[in-house]
Image (tube, rainbow, N blue to C red; front, side, top):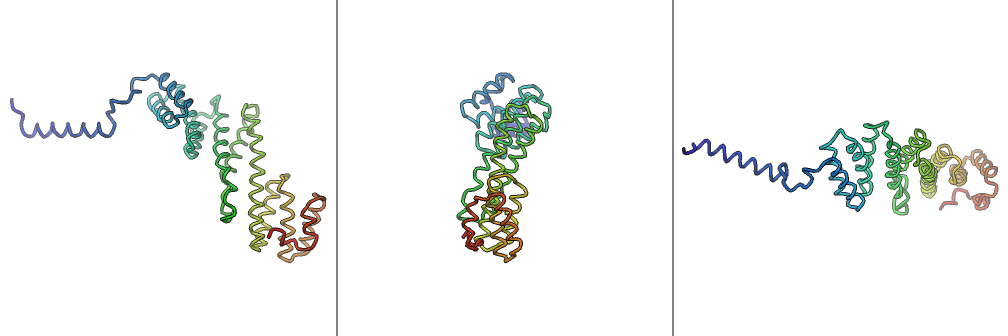
Length: 267
């Protein structure tokens, strides 16, 4: 029996749609992972991760979670993919994956690692905080990554004081506090050189109040003396100088500013 014209048209349309699906990868017969078990898929994902093939590891972890979303392998994949993104220098997706794991599994035995990894990702992003200051206004450099890193580490050490990651987190928190304080000092110096004494004084005071007992406190006090000197507010200048003298009696800033030209020390 000969097919009618309409039947041939329907058959042709179906074949065309099938080819379109195949070209989009929805019927991909070349996917070697199709028949893999959760154990096999996780094992191959870890092997790719250990071999440094991070893009392949990410791809496999995504397949694992999509096919076996409710098993223990999927939970571990959600954490491992965050590390894979981190090693692949994809900070945004790494932090997102950490946040997702923390939200989905707040009581997971390894949730402390998620906080630690989140802090570590932002800690590495913080390394560029002091770059390029000679070519741009340092006040425009946003230390958000450093603050986010500190917050993640702080939550780790607060919630999991006995975690094996806590000692390193505490060490990094100390570094971050010093970095943030130094950032304020660098900005204050910039304003002093511009003659923007009010702005310089504000940043110096902020450094002292927000990051006390850091190495930057000495220069922050000196900057306040210089800023008040520039603003010709002698009483406040002398008050700040007395605090500097009593706190740091051997400060080099006292010797350098003894000539009475405090406001020019950073020119």
